[in-house]
Image 1: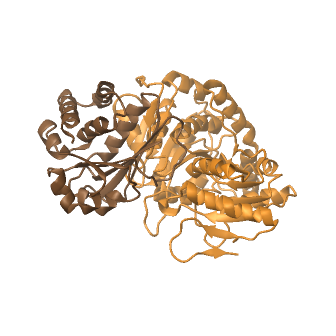
Image 2: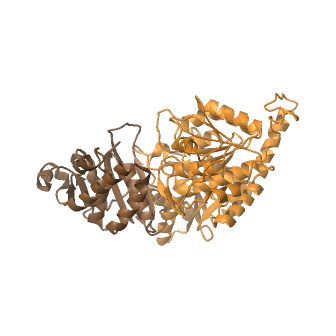
Image 3: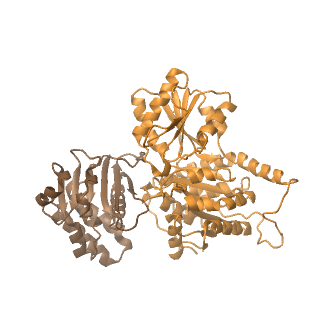
Length: 185
Length: 405
């Protein structure tokens, strides 16, 4: 089973991102769970969201997991040590930041020795979508690093999932996803 | 005429979405519900279906859950198909009217997201609200995942409205663990789902002015007992109809439901009784325990009311030790599942060693490892041939160990 944990602030779209990824993978015949953990806090509070993806029905309804991937879509949460909780040496971190990886690791010491990839998902979403909603660019970066699905197949599914939105929003998200796919490093 | 909703053969839905689509497909005449917290996205989704032309019926937004259930009672007595949704504090506020609805034999369907009751305030899942409504005279069906939340809601209409039953029904799903967890759901198309439920058949409708009816009459000692006994009889005899509806649903979808669900019980020496999403988590724990040679099985009442006491006793007759897991704080007693199962065993001359565990209150995580621990403790009781563990334990409770004997 592939397990993914998102770190986000409420309002940045981690729940929507986690559900979109689950939807994409379900269309390839996989079984999925997408859920989130938050309290009664409002917009801006740190929260986490989760994806489980497997070839057979997922029965475990506990929230606990050892994630294969940790996706951090808020640049300030990268500095919270909680993002390495319950991870192991194989866990891959994809974090949003405007910093170079070396500069980042100098400050975020908890990420030293971990498999870390960076992407400026905030900047990309601001430039391509017009709002700081870094969830879809993070999906582009995740697909590139994980190779979980063919990128064109991913784009086809995500366009369909976004189809309830105006064309301008869909186009912006697709551009953001493609840019993140190219720029993650 | 309501528009048809184009659904894929497989959707990725959370439990809220699944339940609201089932309500939409039932083409309910009146939904009366409180639209904000503590209510759930089920109401929000339903309102959006209505606004977009997918629902013909009325949607009444009321100022409280007490009013929601009151409006449901009025609409159902008038002769319409009626449904609502609630959770937690909203459920608590409804309780007075829940008893009225069942006493008037009104087949209202209510989709419940099970969440904790204050105080302290908590938005997460446990069975506190379900247990509060336990004796309200409703049929309570349990769903363990979004697919089941959808399926049970479709079945609920057909069970409630059957002329042999005519009782209100709740469908229950765990807060967040099911209600806000997206999984693969295979829905029926709108026509097939509606055909399964069927047209609503009014019984003694108040709007039939040529045949005046009284609902909610006053009865003192000369008739009250007979009314309540008749109502209880309807609940006790409803299993025949529940079984019929589950059989018809299996024929239509291939998905088989039973009033008592069980897992690997046939050769089991010990068993866990657990209800809700933790039943599925426990299935994984049972598989792991069996790899270690522990012969353990699971059992769950799919209908919490009517409680299938004889069926449960029959399935547990060869079991040496049983742990009953309750997701609600019993406040001065053993948990409800412990008491019901112990009573069922005693009534059938069985004497398995029984223990009780309280778990998952206010959304506290219950993992496969936690369940494995319970299985191992229960196995100790079976091996010893007597109870050597605590009578009542607490799973994943922080602080000093708490137990009662």
